[in-house]
Amino acid sequence: MKPDISVVIPHLNQPVALARLLQSLDAQDAGNVRFEIIVSDNGSRAPLPAEITARPGLRTVSTQTPGPGPARNEGVAVARGAILAFTDCDCIADPGWVAAIARHFAKPAAAPVIGGEIFIARRGLRWDALEAYESIFGYRQHLYIKRDHFAATCNLAMRRATFESVGGFGGLELAEDRDWGQRAHALGMAHQFVPEMRIATPARRSFAELGRKWDRQVAHEYEFVRSPAGHLRWILRALAIAASPMMDIPLIVRSSRVEGLRARLLAFGTLVRIRLHRTRRMLYIAFGGDRRALAESWRSGEAAK
Image 1 (cartoon, one colour):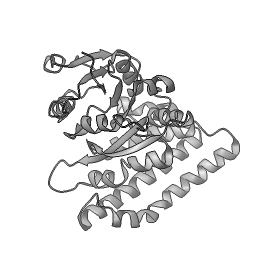
Image 2 (cartoon, helix red, strand yellow):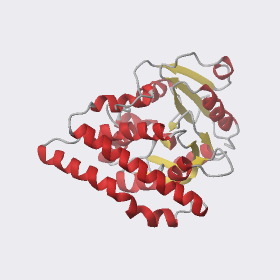
Image 3 (tube, rainbow, N blue to C red):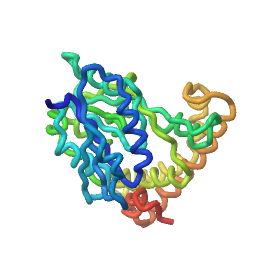
Image 4 (cartoon, rainbow, N blue to C red):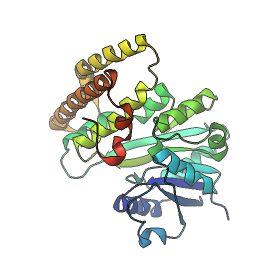
């Protein structure tokens, strides 16, 4: 019997995190909803452990084309469900995640693309600086959908027919979630935020890791600079970003995603650091730096100096 939903998970060198995600999928309160799990390995150094590959209801595929986008496409190619759901291997699904997706698409006038709530899974009792910062600024899915017309792929779902109409995810040369969502929007396929569709994700483990995330984003954004005037605007924007943290103090003060003065001060301190990092990277590219090296730094763990 075909599943109702296919959950597609890209994987690269994180078997322990993947095992946690699979445990959360095993614990789904999905009712009568049938779902399959497809893990798409993207060239990990070691094969997936047998305790993962032998799990009932799970299939594995692999691709050597670098990037989570091509890995997701490979998973979709073997998926059997009429609905496609995407998350990342370091996430944890809320027990009602699958059911929330199914409920949405059971509605007669359901939006063709949905994104759910993304929140930070804390590592301990006290906030650390990266957890506080990313809780406020890291995953504002409702804003991505409303303002930018895309949903982050760690908590995204659509009908298979919608995916086939839009086409697959892109590779490392672009931000594949933003690109896919905006292609869907251009075709008139509305996105909707579904807060009951909840995924937890860990904060980055180090500032260097957070910096690599922004290195990739900055490199992709520069792709759209097409003229000398655009180049000048890029430089001015870089300088404005360095001065921008003060404008976000009200957001930090009002946020319900962190508690206490300490966490808010940690969030602000990290915000200042990452905005200065972005400015430095933007100026690096503007004055001839290697944009491709920045785009690919997430995979090697090394960023251009």
